[in-house]
Amino acid sequence: MRVDKFLWCVRYFKTRSIATNACKQGKVRLSEEILKPSKEVFPGDKLRVRKNQINYELEILDIPKSRVGAKLVNLYIHDITPKEAFEKLELLKYSKDYYRKKGTGRPTKKDRRDIDDWFENAGEEKKEEDRE
Image (cartoon, rainbow, N blue to C red):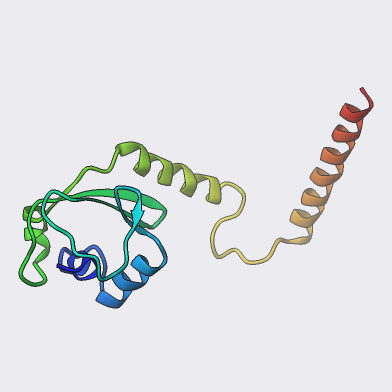
């Protein structure tokens, strides 16, 4: 079965065209080899799929005849993604939320002054380090 069709059948991508585009962009690999959408996959192959900033590692157990229900996906793939990948995503979320909340808009005048002060202080510290 084609790799793009397989990823769509096991519900890793919502549409087959999204799966095809992921393959074309180099987000689907088979043992470090970038796959074209038409590459055939077989049981026992291990795929690496980059989706939502996580490198999922999948082992193909069997090939479905058509798109399967969400409850039956585990019959066809085994997810061997390390837990560190998910922890890294959590840290990334926290780092983005640290300064400004999503949807708060542009920085206020006070925020802008604070940012400018920080950049000025960082520049002065660098000059002092260069002198030493």
